[in-house]
Amino acid sequence: MKIGSIALFAATTLWLTTPMLAYAQAGGGLFDTADTNGDAVVTRAEFIAARDASFNRIDRNGDGSISDADFTRIARFKPDVAKSLQDSLKGADANGDGRITREELHAAPARAFDLADENKNGSVSQAERAAVKSAVEARR
Ligand SMILES: [Ca+2]
Ligand SMILES: [Ca+2]
Ligand SMILES: [Ca+2]
Image 1 (spheres, rainbow, N blue to C red):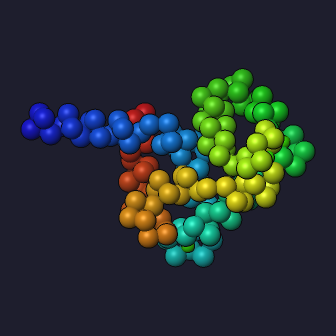
Image 2 (spheres, protein in one colour):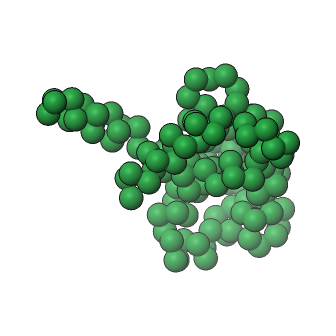
């Protein structure tokens, strides 16, 4: 019994590493609005469409690209959120110029989606979302 709970604890800790936090803070919220056809399942296409729609929100200074300049305010009040948001966007800067354009965000790997899609069937069910959510909340 004891060994079992230690193993479970270890597994949970591993699962909640940086990508998981990045998921929670940068990508997780997307699922709440992503299900546009209301079938209770979020497909990859729906997720990417929701992420595209979030571009304007992340581009705080409205210069058409996401860069460090957009994070100065959030970095002051919520440095850990800014950090994980930046980490989660790192892979999106395809040409490495330090700015993420709308096109680069659209083409970026959907890491939060892949994390949540546990059975890898290309869509995230409510059960999969609930599993991720409770894993994140358990850590708080
Ligand atoms: Ca759907
Ligand atoms: Ca910007
Ligand atoms: Ca770029």
